[in-house]
Image (cartoon, rainbow, N blue to C red; front, side, top):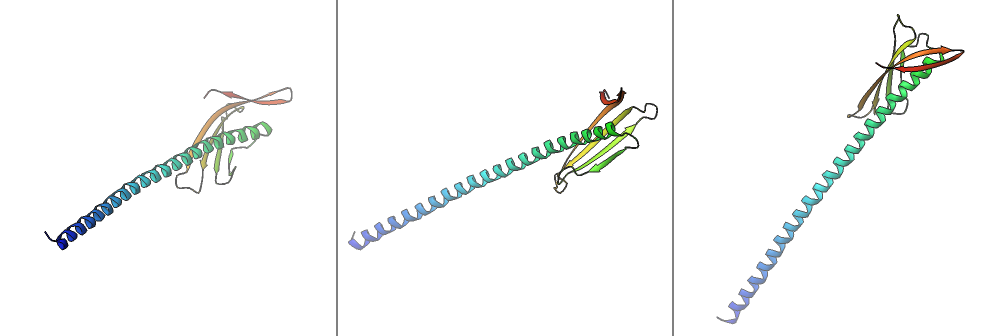
Length: 148
């Protein structure tokens, strides 16, 4: 074997090592890209779940506040109050319905339906229904919750 053959064989070995190193670098880079993509997907999913939970809690409290608002109106003046639709906070819609039994004029059923947020595709709807008896004693008026 002469010197030129030995040098060319050494050069081929060195070139093939660089090729293998480049392939390994590409494989490691691809694996890292997959890991980063999975972490991104998991983070986005967690944020969406947290937002949806926030919407659920906000809608529940809006429904409760609607019932409280209707109860305050019934304490002050129940005549002809059948409910209303309000935006208690921005991006919310609260619908209050008040039913009164003509046979029992002191019994009221309040149904409140809250939607939050109104501008989102995944708006949450919560509803709450309570029954009250309006009691007047010695110039004092109160509402008593009664079983459905």
